[in-house]
Amino acid sequence: KAAFINFISDEEWKSIEPVSSWFGPSSFLMSSMSALFKLSMWIRHGHGYLTENLGIPVWGSYAVFGLATLFLGTILGLVSEALRTD
Image (tube, rainbow, N blue to C red):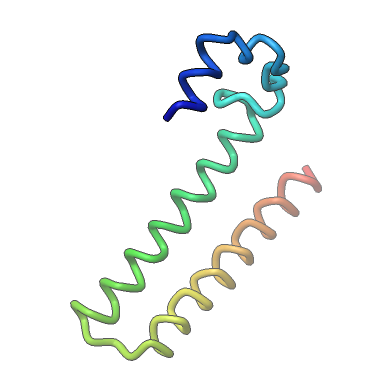
């Protein structure tokens, strides 16, 4: 606590360089990181729902997410290819 008070009262904060815009909270990089974190939390909650509420074994939940990943990748690949050839 004392170190923080000294940091403020001695104005040591003035010697610290500000965060670059690339790493700022509203930058594309940090927004992307936030979206990935939210996706990982959604997957975690989905796994919990499948295993705890529906009674699916853990390996079954992994299989569901694995198949969903393969399906989504296939769809995105097909859409990407269709857009590329037009």
